Length: 460
Image (cartoon, rainbow, N blue to C red; front, side, top):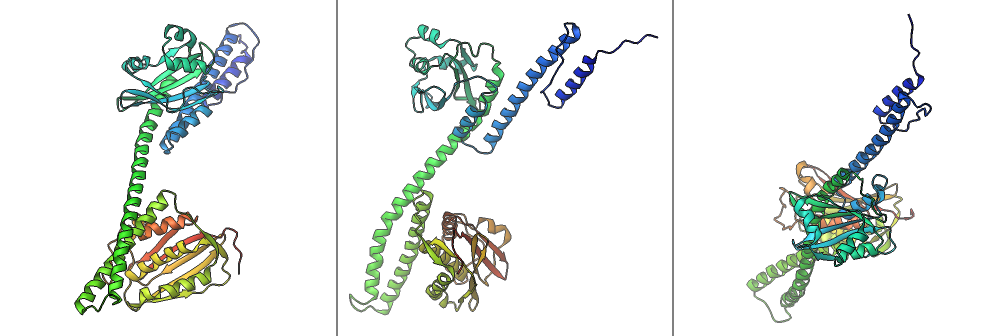
């Protein structure tokens, strides 16, 4: 019985096919021969190159999807696209334009290898009657293989004049749409003619579909940011304008209460006291709003000073004792040795402690105790305010540091709260580079702790 000797190239090709199945495309095939087996080898080599390119396309598209889903802004995604996708498709320039009010196409972003960019962010042109309108109407991409020839046929196209002046010679324009509605365009341009003559359009369309999602997200985010900025400006102006006349009213009330303008009857003094206390509450609210506005607009300036934490806590305890006196609550400091000197804005950290201690007094019963303490941990100091109050339900603690948040726990003496104190406290602590958190147990009390970085402080 005769046996045919197997061609060793076949075994090699089988091994290569299995490797490609596992995603390995860096293959080394024998090149000798001109028979059918050699042709098979060349076909395998060509397949490996094609699969490798497709694999890289999918990997980068997945990467773009990950960036989009992670909440990156459109500018960041486009920068990432320009930096990372060149190995898959050719371009020397990428631009993104959005449809504005349904009438204009406005350049939103552009990056180019050319020394000068002539269509930059903000450039706009009418959409109606333009060649871009045709792309929107058909929903199909447009390829111009020779921009110079295109300009000869369309000499009045200002955008083509500018892109040719920039050095581009061919382009691929892809429409962007979201929820079935056109929202803009993505432009790929090359300094060489015919760059996109044989290109597969599917990869461009996939990129455009991915970017359409982030365009819409970015638009909504931008609107939210603008509304938030308007809100901050409005609150800042309103609070500032209210504080001055209210301060004048409070000044007159204190003048009456001092009997400088004559003696008051008992009823008059009671009414004046109520009005004065209400003025204090209103001024506190206005100052809180101004603090929130200053922090959110980045105008909170920290005046950091070297601070001995032990001395600072004792001084704070002395100045705030009066807050707890009416409810017979004791405020004490738990001393600690070897605390570092840290650099903080003392007025702002005093504000943090005042907010925390005021809350502790507000939700504690008479004849209980509030303890201030501080401990050094590695590169941080942890400062804690511990009370023997009612405690906070576990499910409500996650809302504590949000604006205007309140819990179901009621003040023990009917004190008022607007729910901004802890939100401001969190912002001040975070501005110092620290964090704040709470541990609480119903019926036993709460401990609010915040950290402050040592920032090169020294131990006493």
